[in-house]
Each structure stands twice: as structure tokens, then as C-alpha cells.
Image (cartoon, rainbow, N blue to C red; front, side, top):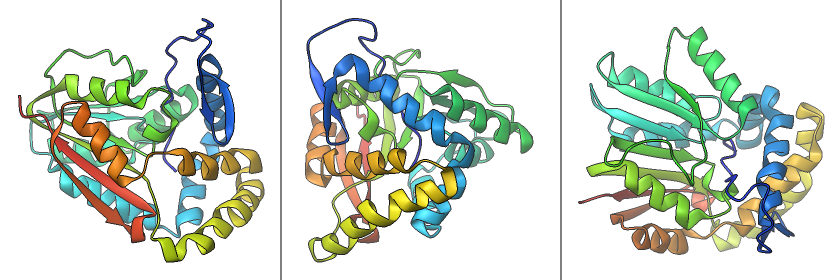
Length: 259
């Protein structure tokens, strides 16, 4: 539901490697452009669709993430794939004038919407068009790094997680909010909603059924709770915890950089 942060790594080069774009297999070099197209298409109606698709639950999921982030006055915070700026806005209010909260995204259309909405709220935050796999920040800089509904769109998730850990200072916290594996008894109902109702809503509200069909497919291709936990641990994060929300429709993964 949140914005894309697919990597542009290798763009313009033919590596011969393939990856998934929903259920399709595409060259790695094509994925970033395809994901960008999805989010350029839906940026203007993005928040409206989020509310409709989740019946407003995405606000509760983000509120839980904000609470777990425990941002304090003066903190440095990085929101990756921050899109329309929901998390960055909340973090900026908590970090205060002595803090430093960055809103980043790889998609220019989404980033522009987020920047404008922050300005409308009187918040002048640093904003950067940034690839999650090659973050333009120094080592050991942020106390909190977040990515909400963006990791599944990244081509090399392991590389992105390693970058997130790199820019965290020792004792810092990474929070990954993402769609995950729903409780098995609810899977048939959830599948029916995802592949029938969701594209229909996308067409009616955003004028784009295909982008929301991709959304449903990308969720199924994303690592489940245990797999993502292991990936975070392999990236060097410790004390990784998993919080299932809405019977596993969404999960929050939280890890600490100890040194």
C-alpha cells in the first residue's frame, strides 16, 4: 500500500539476471522502471485508495509502527519509500526542531506529493530521491530507519537491508512494515478480495486496475514473516521481533544494530 522503492541498480545495463514483477519474470533492469510506472500512475489518488482498500486500517498499522519507533527529541530518522509522508510527518513532530527527519523515495511523483503535503502542514523536511540499495548517507548516522510497504518492491532486498543497517548508528532500530502471510483459514477470502475486488476498486477510484493487480501479486511474492526475519538477521540486525497485525495481512519486523 505504501509507495515503491524498487532499486534502480543496474539500470541501463544488461546483466542477464531476472527477477519478479508480480507474477511475471522480467530482467532486473526492467523492474525499477515498471514499478516506477505503477506509482507514477496512482500517486495522485494514493492516500484515498489506501483508506478504501484497508478500510482505514493502514492508519492503525502505521500508528503502531510510529509507537515502536519511539522517536525522541533530537533524533535523526530516515523514512525510506516514504511516499506521501505519513511516517515522516509523525517522526518530525516527535523529533522536534533539534531533530533531523529525512523523507526519501525512488519515485519522483510520490516524493513530490509527500513533500507538498509536509509543506502544507508547515513542515520543511529534507527530501531526497534515493535508491534504497545505495543510500546517500554516511555510516552510523540515524537512530531510527523505517520502510513501510516499500521493501517488497525492491529488486535486491538483502542489499537494501544491508544498506539500512549501515546507516543506523549502534543501538539504532530498523522497522519494516510490510504485507505478509495471512492466517491460513482466511486465505481464500483474502485471495478473493485481492484478485477480484482490489483491481475493481483501483479502476473505479484511481482509473488503474493493473497497478492494483500488481499490488496483489507482489504481496504473494514477498518473503513471509519467518523468511524476512532471517533476512534481517543475515544483514546483521539483532533482537529481531515480528508483530503480526490483522491476522498476518501485515507484519512489522523490528531489528536492532548492536555494534
